[in-house]
Image 1 (tube, helix red, strand yellow):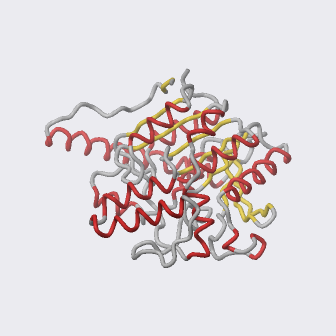
Image 2: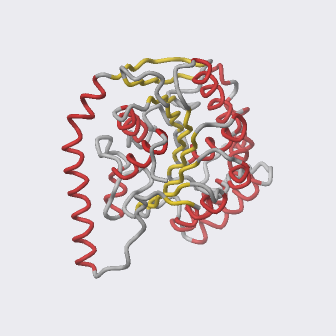
Image 3: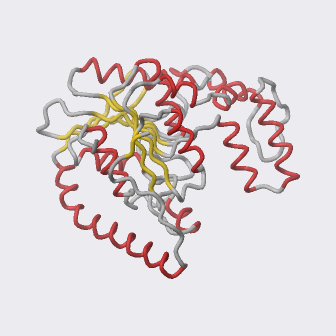
Amino acid sequence: MTHLRFEAWPSPALPDQKQASRSSVRRWSCFIIALVLFPFIAAASAFAEESKISVGPIDAVLTVPSGVERPPIALLIAGSGSTDHDGNGPQIKPATLKKLSAQLVARNIATLRYDKRGAGGWKAEFGRPEDFRFKDYADDVVALQNYLRESGKFSRVALVGHSEGGLVAILAAQRVGADRLVLLAASARRQGDLLKAQLEKKLAPDMFAPIAKAVDDIMAGQIVDPPPPGLSIPPAMQPGIASAFVEDPIAPLKKIVTPTLIVGGGRDRQVARLDFMALSTASPAAKTLWLPDMNHVLNDVTDEADDLAAYNQSERPLDPDLIEAVAAFIAGSESR
């Protein structure tokens, strides 16, 4: 795989005091950079054109930098759950997509971000919730990408998938292609396997065992009724969940020839370093960026408490190296 020139790999272990000092310097550097850049980004945002659009039943927000003829555009794909166009869900509000959009638009890259199915309530146009299948997410991205291409207003379309959105981006790119593919904090494992790995770290063995078995049964196409305590998936919804649990990102990623950027974070408690490495292996021509202090919602954090707090800090800036890498990659100006 090729690496971006600005790739930041973890430094060798340092004594606690030196490591803390280095982390402190990085945090203050990021803070100062944010203060310096804020007036320019705010000014750029003031000259952006933002509009609400609908593509079929999909509600989206299109933001285009003013005065830029046929800019590239990033189609931002949110992670799991009923996530809206800002990257917020019912329980967490990190505004990941809203912040990423603002930073990209400030760098003359248009963005399209949309409400996932179920965000703000389930629309009748999507059919019955129990008939949902994971491929429907990819269908939505394909429809949005076709809309952008048919408009003729953009020089290239980049699919930017965060977390579960990375899998959706891979499936969509395999079907209709893309000019760029960006995977942010994406998993390389089937979601059922990832869920079990996450729960095993949190639950006592006696509580984890029946949940793991239920997940395996659902992945095998069985209906688990009643589901065990701690796994609140109604039987009617289990076929749809199973379609998500069994989708493997590696096989389709191997078939994609689209220029790809894979970004992972060292403080991501939801997706492991092994996922980053597996995705990179599956796409050996991909550019990769590992950010040691970045968490799952793309913020730099210092410890577990700071990480948890970041999930509801919509004003907290994204990792600056992430922003520059994604913007350069989409624009085609990354180091070669």
